Length: 171
Image 1 (cartoon, rainbow, N blue to C red):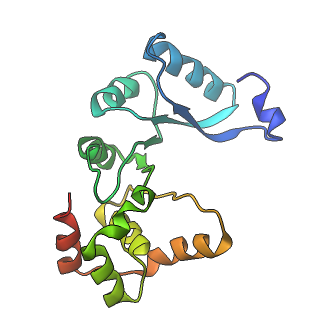
Image 2 (image 1 turned 135 degrees about the vertical axis):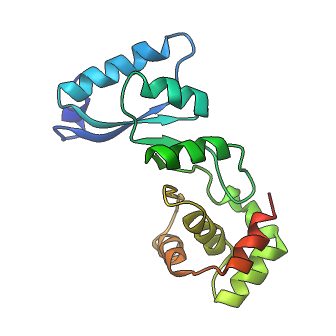
């Protein structure tokens, strides 16, 4: 990490997302190093990737955590306990794989709701995330400007309680 902000042409990395806690190194040691980098002004916020609620609790005993990034989408809600903890603590939750690699589009519920809103099934899946929790910040990947615009337009899709109930039932 030494010198990296310079290679990025930054004085400070706004969010350093620790992608995978190394099982060979005590978590407190890893977070201690990041905390020291924050104290030096090289890192502004620390985030964790692929953690459990228990690991997040342990991490917060060592340092403050601004975000977590775990797999989470309309069909895969295995990180629900972690999401609830993030809500309680005001921690951003960055769901990776928010569109399930396109598998969500195969569900007729998504297609039906999308048609009713003049949207795509992917937009419905992203809208569900945005309605599901105030700390969810989906960051779907994209390969084109058109796809990026489609993803951004998901924020304008207003799901009704009935829509959300149908989508909730998918998991």
